[in-house]
Length: 140
Image (tube, rainbow, N blue to C red; front, top):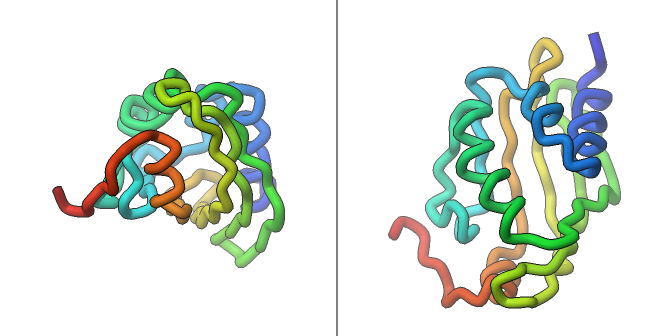
């Protein structure tokens, strides 16, 4: 079985190649996926559960709205069943034509070779500005 770090590295490699089915294949059927509170795709920060929900609510939406979107890993921290990745997001939000260049952090949890949890942290005010949105209020 692949190590926790190997699983996460493969997820990023697959994402970078645009191979979303391969990304989703690494997810446990009950994975919980959380974006940062205030993220325009999920302002309240509630999780999406399961690969199908993640594909529908996140990957299919983001794939159509962003041009040249990349996640550039900076530092990976191995904490056993948890992997933390410091990274940068870059890309152009097509509806506004604005470019994103933002620091982000991902916290992944893996059990028996499958991703069970993902938590994103990002400067949501910067993201909202790029996406041309008034400040998103959590819980609304």
